[in-house]
Length: 259
Image: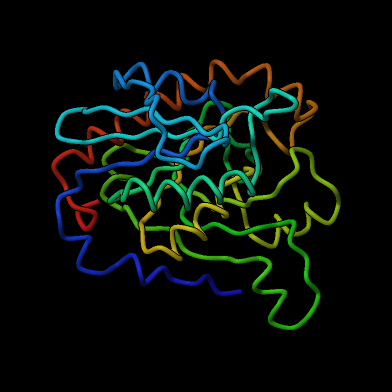
């Protein structure tokens, strides 16, 4: 299907200097280096509903107010609340409470070597779509895939020499045959568990979203995904930290239209 253009994010607000950036990051391991890099402090007085495990860090970096939010740990099992449900809820609540000019969904992802991805590569997503929302009814099928263009940042991609590719999102770490076929149909280079959900919320609430994804595992490689992900997580998070810092440095002093 043809991607939906995020026309709502291309209004006059893109001409104002960016002052308020919101990072949405699924795992604490992915967030911690950036929290330290930007010298952010955890906010004990939560702007979120009582009882949710969501965590917020805030501070100033150069001319920017930066918030990093994470969905936190599952209150029963103690693991990171990954996936589309937590991501979409957190994105909605954070936009309402913090009123960001720009969202950056930073995190790790699987990559396809057949599409040019290698361990440690950092990609900007040009398009996002779901691969596990199968609704085989006319028009509902297109809604399920939810393919849309992301907020365009050609100057940022060129200046930082970042790879650009399409992102496919689903709630499972592994891939069944149906998911694999859908990912191929999405022409995806990278795969995650949150991106398209955050894109949907950003589109609804008229906030531009960038997707910065570092490759931890090669989906079409010869190693089990879970094993390769855990093996590379810490090292790849360092690459993500460096790329995200460069992105924020580039953004400082610019409007969305200059990205």
